Image (cartoon, rainbow, N blue to C red):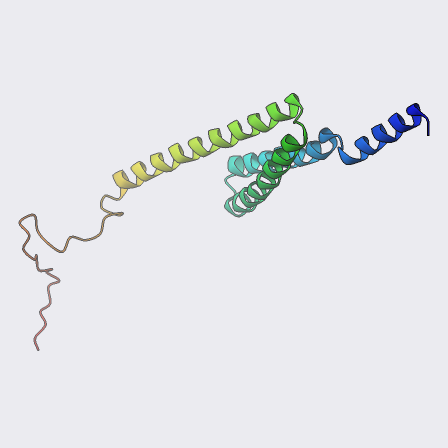
Length: 142
């Protein structure tokens, strides 16, 4: 076998063993980006059933993406533009999580103003530690 045939065979087998990371990562990343858009749409529409569905789908897609990106990094690297897109998706997720936490806190404060004591458990003891009997207007005799 000639030297050029050996080199050709070696390069062909190397191409089969190490697939292009872009061809594996691009569809996975597109799935994450699509799920993120779906989640943003259901947040904007305030559609709770769809929100829960899209959040679960995004969670699964992100798990697959992270696994694929880790495997690609171990095999030789991730193209910088795909790494940047994954980082942007992660930043969008973090921003949505923060916005949702702020909205939840604002809702809790509004509920506290409108319905004070709603989230509090009834006190069984007074400030002095003694039991405060509840007066219901009716007495019970045994």
